[in-house]
Image 1 (cartoon, rainbow, N blue to C red):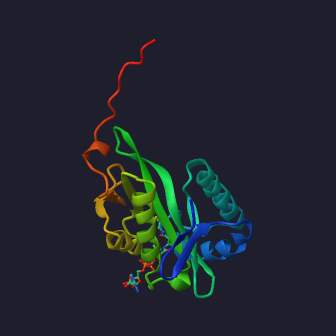
Image 2 (image 1 turned 180 degrees about the vertical axis):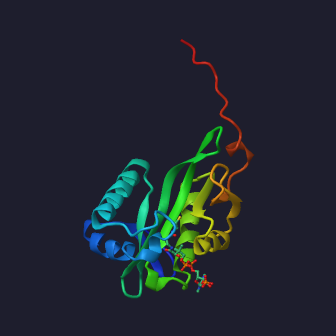
Image 3 (image 1 turned 60 degrees about the horizontal axis):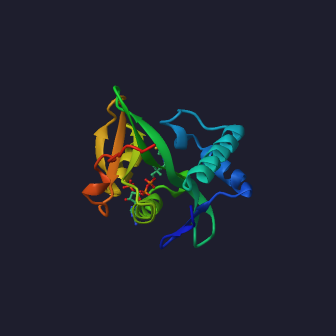
Length: 187
Ligand SMILES: CC(C)(COP(=O)(O)OP(=O)(O)OC[C@H]1O[C@@H](n2cnc3c(N)ncnc32)[C@H](O)[C@@H]1OP(=O)(O)O)[C@@H](O)C(=O)NCCC(=O)NCCS
């Protein structure tokens, strides 16, 4: 994923020396109160970064550091990842937007700003059909953020204590949503 830019922020892939800073952000208990309910350890943070970095190299999109332009501080992360959404009797492959922000920076619209840019990138550059986001139903800030980003919210079809937000790409037309037309390969 290339570097993205908004009025106040740079969104860029993580670098090796970002680990200490991202651990400081992720070790605040409020970040993980809904999922998984406890702060990540240093080793879990390292694995998380390596895992997401692998996803970036495989799929050409992934996690990015959110860097504030005014002081060049990393204040959070956000990005896109593949998600198999469980509908109970079938699953659908989706692209999910995820995000977290340093506890000290909540309430200033930073992730809304980053999220709008990720959606623009996903729709205009990647030509994604849809972007989804998921959050526990008590995660009020995440759910408000999804609304602010223009997502349509429904209960998770399989886990009603979770909410799924989704936004469709307005740049695509009907042909992008019709099934593949397959012709027989001649031997
Ligand atoms: C989810 C999370 C990133 C939301 O952070 P946030 O700061 O509330 O999100 P936003 O960037 O959208 O900011 C919105 C807030 O800034 C305010 N704001 C100030 N200036 C603003 C602006 N220019 N634009 C939008 N909102 C602005 C809004 O009023 C809102 O505040 P309020 O909720 O007190 O009314 C944060 O709570 C978090 O890191 N949570 C833990 C991790 C997590 O749950 N991740 C999601 C799991 S899927």
